[in-house]
Image (cartoon, rainbow, N blue to C red; front, side):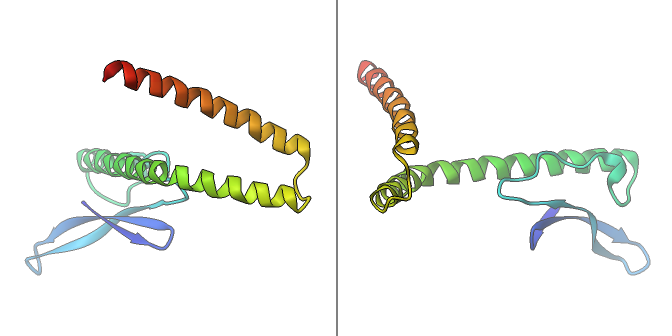
Length: 132
């Protein structure tokens, strides 16, 4: 099965042999939506365009494996970008507070969240030091 991105959708294509022309053609089995993070699950076998019951079951499995792999990739990409995003957002928050666009209460709630992050980082450092 091949997966081809087209706009905000992913086309799921299979190779089908055409005995008349003695060639293999690609046919679209289904298309799945792609949002910010990947769609949750593959379509049910009865929603696929064609194929025997067994073929559709195999295709659904392949589609689900593709979706799972894309989700993992998206999560890894997001995780690697997250520290930079947080740092940038903190800088923007400071500038907004200085401009008077953020209240002290809003800033205090962010500080509470950062205290939780600090606690997690301390625990991670301690466990890393124990392992070393």
